[in-house]
Image (cartoon, rainbow, N blue to C red; front, side):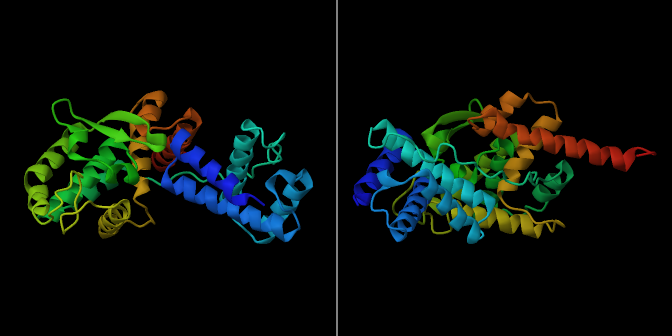
Length: 299
């Protein structure tokens, strides 16, 4: 059914034209292959022969399998992009996923740490060993800049500019942005690079330029950074479930709480759309409501 060539063309488009991340492309490929299996099972031998009723049948099958709203939305987005691409290339005359309703995700607010909890987290980072210096530098940088863990793992020595206190970040779609990193992060990074990183660097023959290194001296993966941050947050003994990404949420929330402009926060976070950043205004409203309830005598 020429499935392979259609899929390969779309994957090439995502990688070369859209500069999509490996995570995005692998998810999209998996979703399209899943859809191909479905249409083959109902007797359709080509993507171009899919009709609106076939799409409705596919959606019904997803709901019967009890997929989460977020997963269904991602699958629809992947297939909508797939058909948009082949429409552009004039392989199909219409996108059968254009009119499909995207299920709304439940409006769950992002979890974040209060400023007092952030102080407790950094107070818990003790020790002068190379790995202690590295871990503190990672957490200071994540909180100071709001960058994603995946962006943090890609940083090299050359991306840090101590003269003006900025870090060059490669975000989604390979888009570059410069982010200020603040005095605490600057000090922690300088100490780590001059001392702890040097000690770790000597252990590896490849002499990588990666900023953050593992105990063998090689580049630290994003998965390892998530583990490190998660372990450090767990040791701080908060009474709530937290993820490394919540450091990013905390950065955005604290910036807005302290009067930062929404568009500035959008640019610092590397959000393409302002609506993505606006969720943090809801977080700040929740914070105001909590403070009001705690301190107003007739709340």
